[in-house]
Length: 278
Ligand code: TA6
Image (cartoon, rainbow, N blue to C red; front, side):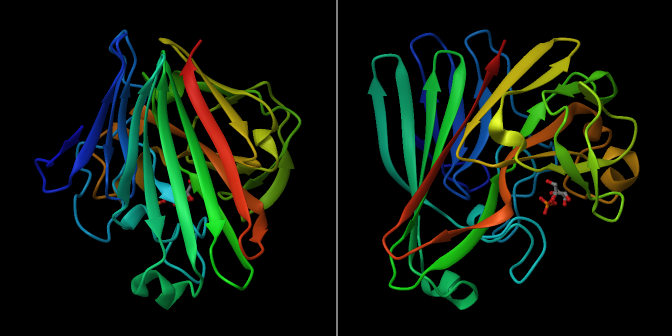
């Protein structure tokens, strides 16, 4: 169902008969919460998230598109700062979903001169959230994009959290001049700012383990995995992050950045990205 937000930002809520629920703002088609049937919220939202046009909401699942990271466009592109349309909601046997649509506009054409449609489906299946992200080139010229679902997962405490499943993958370390290293460990642990692009890391499951359990994250079509926590210094400079809240989340992101996705006219790309507690 569609609600008028307390901060003027309309949002959709999804519920399942088993008691799972989700809240998705039309702004950025931004998933803000996913509560499973045991009432656990898998996603972190900053207590100081700013609800202002043009500013990305801090937490949940920001959609970074058509650019991941800094570059020609503003950081992480415009999809997360655009208002999407609610296209469809469905309640089928065991699956409750909503589909959101973003099409090109005069605004987007100023920075990205192409015709496109983004179709983003958020599904609740039991105690799993699944996302299907589809990009369609609706124009007559090819275009390239990079992007990510930049998910903030709730953790009990970042310094007792480990991310597992990326051993053996090469990562670009954004905190060490983008130098490349091979992940030697079974566990990625956090003792300072960590910001790494695991190249082709999305080829298998990733587990986020903390003192309260394990979140399993699965991918299809998405290529890379970004793992990020700002730690205390960088968090100090983030005005939209509450005091000490850097300890309460880790980003494990579905990413296409190791190479661009080129879409020919009328061609589509779609990827899925799902998570649930083990
Ligand atoms: O996901 C990692 C990252 O690219 C970091 O480098 C950091 O900039 C983070 O995204 C947050 O970016 P944002 O523009 O949302 O503040």
